[in-house]
Image (tube, rainbow, N blue to C red; front, side, top):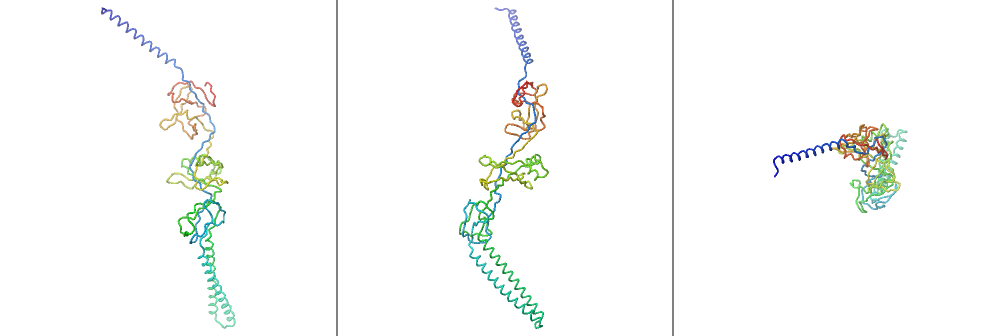
Length: 386
């Protein structure tokens, strides 16, 4: 049996051993903390450079000229000389409307003209007779003036008859509808025998000149402000003349082989969309593009004296973008930046970063505020000690 004194002695011994272990552990932890080495981290020194970005805008394509072909006289469609999708030259016949009634109108107008000519000749004879008789005082001045009035009236009737003849000739000519421009024929909804007229809501067809193609696209108000700031020139016309060529991305995501030029900016913004319409012109020598095509306009923007940093060197927190800036004591701290534009893997930054400033290049999510690092400079793919 252990005595009460022995039990107290053993208990005191174990208590002393436990306290010694705790003290040793705390001492070891403090020693480790004090001897913790800085974390090695790649960094980059900020420098200025030139960079380019691209903006894309949905576009609708139209031929340089899109002409609705409409009849200018009423009648039955007698002939269709072209097929849908065919290419026609300026002045080529497209349609013919039955012209029998218009030929009769012309004949009637010609008959009236001939009758007016005969009446004028008779009035002229009467006037000459009165003038001869008036010299011998055979007729009065009233009779002479009456003859003069009759002649003038007959002359006016003849002029009206001639005008009616010209109108009849024009209407007869309208029965053959010709192409006003060279281009491609669109859909032809009417068929032979259809009744057509000037009041028809639907055109006979649409003729498109696609030797050049217009690409219409819309730019937001913010983008248009940047457009005005970034391009040289006092007026919009000057800015457009200084613009670089633009590209057209087709529906299959391939780039159209010929570059285009922005040539028009609308005079006002659309109040409903808050955007402004612009027009780029593209050559189309192979007639590859047609009216109704869609695509995207790709506009290049050049930046000079800009700071370019990898996206991997940033932290996105609550809609704001930060980098880890390294101070002279090699401690890191979060710094907000203002992004002007971005490429596939980089941000273009304004004056929120200074030339010569050092930031952590990667692994920023593993570092804490005011943490000490061992920076490894990694500019231009080189690695050296800071």
